Amino acid sequence: MPKNVIDATRWLRPDGSAHGLRTQIFESGDSRGTPTRISRVEFPGTLGTHILSPQHTDLNGDTLTEFDPRTFFGEATVMRFRVTADNSVIGPAEIQAGGSGAMQSGDIVILNNRAGAEFVPTVTPQAAKWLIDIGVKLVAFDEHINIGEGDPSPTVRAFLDAGVPIIRNLVNLDRVKSERVALMALPLAVHGLISSPCRVILLD
Image 1: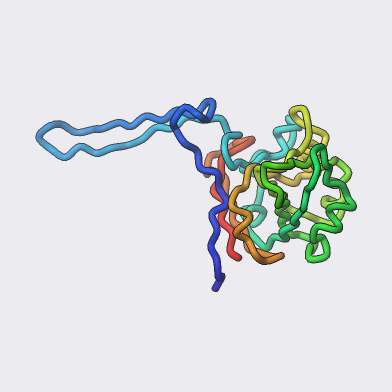
Image 2: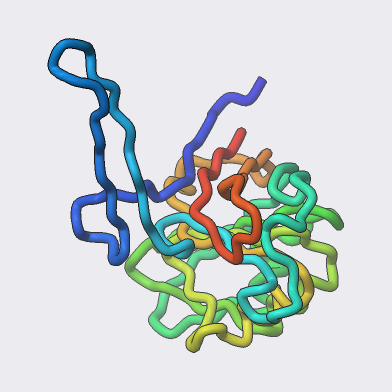
């Protein structure tokens, strides 16, 4: 059994702080009975902790529906980076120094910036290619890692064009102690989604 169960999800809050998130609560029934309550939620697929599919960059690419559920569940390598300066990058050399020795083909890779919000590095397209060549099946970034400018950035395009979905905005990674963990990150069960909020659970 795992020692720690870690929720790495940045929860969405319907308090006006997240652009595009709207919630409504409805009651049905009448004053003579006990009313029931239901909720309606409307939001873009890229709020909070979310996952992107290849169709984000390619109209002919797969949506999240087309992926085997095993893509979103499995063993993950945690790569940790100690960033000490502004405008730092994570390239192939940093990837190799960050824990790539524990990585196996078919792994999920989690990139963790141990500096937190103080210094936010940018992942290069060359680093993305290195991970793709090794055989990553899913890549996940904590909330304090930048994956490039532009929408899509060259780094985002590199992963998605290779058929590797991207999870963004993980939190609580400081609670992870191991180099290898189990990860589960299932998108919403809605056909045809290009992006979706997801709940990410780590078993350490």
